[in-house]
Amino acid sequence: MKYFDELKRSMNFLAQDPRTVFIGQAVAVAGTAMTNTLKDISPDRLIELPVAEEMQMGMTTGMALNGLIPVSIFPRWNFLICAINQLINHLDKVQVMSNGGFKTKAIIRTGIGSERPLHPQFQHVGDFTEAIRSMCTTIEVIRMEEPADIFPAYEKALLRDDGRSTILVEYGDYYGEK
Image 1 (cartoon, one colour):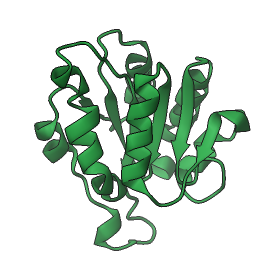
Image 2: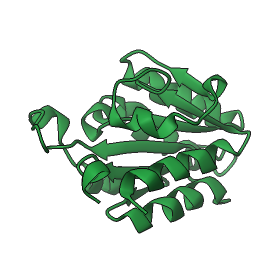
Image 3: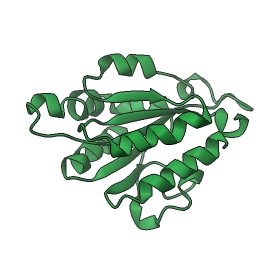
Image 4: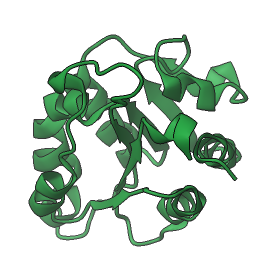
């Protein structure tokens, strides 16, 4: 399978679980390459948000605390950086701060921006995988380099029963290259 096709298959798999909801920018309306991976998802499962990344991550945590499994989409790492307070100080630490009393499972989808055929400049192509991985106590960060990596990573994120959230990192350039 191709990289894009595996992402689309994974999103359709996630949508089969009634607890999942997809939130973010360009989720219900066109705007990024990630939008195309959600075309088969029912519109009532897509929550379009304005450019307000910290609010989005706060909503993600709230939804997870209430038993939903939010699939929170930040098209590029550079945008997810704007939500770092909510990600590191709240979503990642809920289980630790509550002595295991609260467990949240959220799926955070982000990407390393595409540089080909047009370079969008450096504020859109960052890869902060290792930096974020080093800051997280409970969140697992998985970089998906090959098409074969994608479905197992999303399956793990959805089916895990350890109360941990997962950040899944994709490569924008691979949508058309692999």
